[in-house]
Image (cartoon, rainbow, N blue to C red; front, side, top):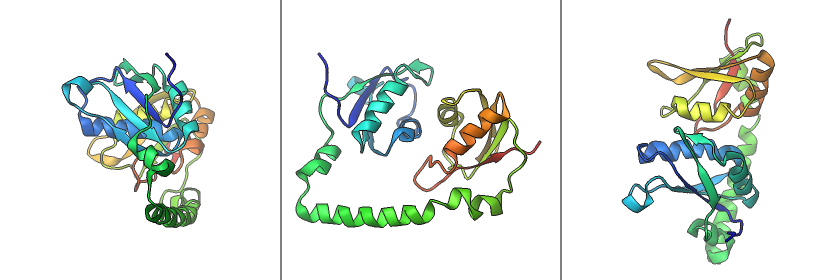
Length: 214
């Protein structure tokens, strides 16, 4: 029986040894590259082990994520993804279960967020990166900084291995906020650098990417 597309996708066959908080962070890092994630539900109770729901704001993002990540090796197990049978509460509210007062509040908040984001947007490419980390000549190794404390190798691998030529991620012991990512060629490294410049692994940390010093 076909389940109609909706904003919520259901994932199973997840490695159930992963801690709940780490799992949610990793799912967020992986799925938010397809669009805005509004909620992630992962329960560790026995019937729900190895399963999760990811709720997207846009239907197109949910569809894209489902297609691109079907069978993706997540913590060494291929993910099985399908649309959830019903929309999540979050989306139902967004579709009209809100009262008018809440809608107005939401609209105002959205306008403020848009203004804030518009003001922030140029930052990753402008003075912000240049003043703090002068870029080096292009090469096949990228240097990442401004990473959140909870960053792990798995999260970064999931972000970068969608790009051709990805080889490996190297974390720096004792320094949670920096890492190196290696590609086969400087051109492939450049594509990933441009695509993920300013990517937010968490809401507060916009990743800064430069070429590593040779």
